[in-house]
Length: 297
Image (cartoon, rainbow, N blue to C red; front, side, top):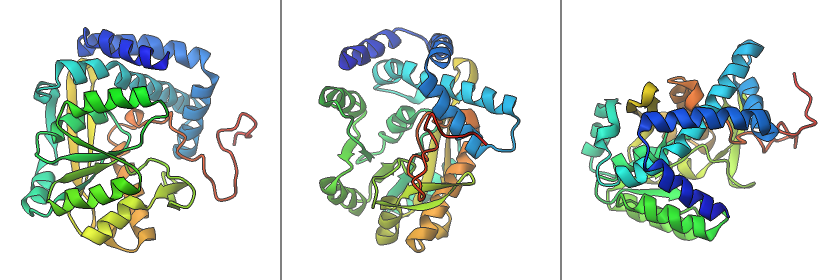
């Protein structure tokens, strides 16, 4: 059923304009906010933890807006994967920090690119895919049929898709050895034993060490990038930022640097970060911030 629904979403949204897709996303997000206690709880908890200086009304507004932005990403799938599979450029309005990206490429060492859960990753994927040999790491979904659809649509851009497992790690180093671009979503919460706690938006967050270890071992240029959604269906702005040298330091310092960089990108437009993701579900004291029974501050 989930596979059929996913296929339907792609088919229907491929018939829409970006502006119309966003209008439908706004309608659906209001319904989900009203009827999904779980989505309200997760996004509201994240906003309360990361933006304690906002008033209750401001936190509520940001949580609601962030859910709308997340739903927009879903409604954009058909447009990106089918309408613009051959040419994503018409959707790109501005590119900020392009010199950072070009400088990294010019070193001819390969590029390790961090792409947080912000805006629309699929746009960034298709834009980066114009560079030969581009590859990205992904976590397979629980349903194999959905994974096959993701591989097909995302692969239409020409990107190499690498699974986040032992076999994938070997492929990662091969991509960088061949001086290509490798993208990783650095804010994907790792399994126990595969991360370290580091501050993220003022909160302890269990953060993957894989990205830091790759950076330290390869010493290739590291760039952070996101695709920001522009209002009124006008398209997307790309943002590139060179990572500070601290990214190559000891692992603890490196993961702290990663979270600082992600926070700086979130500041571009806080509502476009994926606050519906349980970023803080693993805690050192075994607390459960997303639990229904968790007392509010």
